[in-house]
Amino acid sequence: MLFAHWMVLLASLLPMLSAAVGKSVIAKTAGGYDNRQPRAQFDAAAENSVIKRLGWAQDNSWEALMMFAPAILLATHFGVDSSTLNALAGVFIIARLTYVWCYAKNLATARSLVWAVGLICVVWLYIASALA
Image (cartoon, rainbow, N blue to C red; front, side):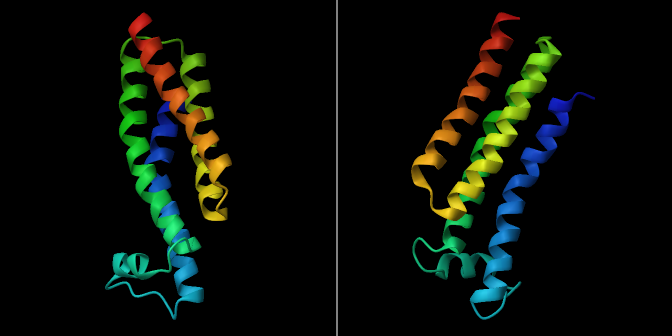
């Protein structure tokens, strides 16, 4: 199994990582975490709080996964060079981890830039698949 395939697993876990960190912040700052209503606690968080931003990062991570996973599968299927595939997958994951961190820290411009890096990796994977 290629490194890129492991990155699909990691990308699948990133939304849950964002949620877990958000839940940890809720547990420490919002009077305790309520497992019966976790989404309600995210929704009730103050606008632009770290809790709310981590919830938004989770949502965006699911959206990014929906583009990334098929791109990796297509690139694998069409025989894109494994070094290209692995490099793009690695850069995508680094960009996504940085994206979540930037979201939590409210670094909007940096967040947008690393989001663009991740998107470029995904588009590059699709183009590489088409040209393979």
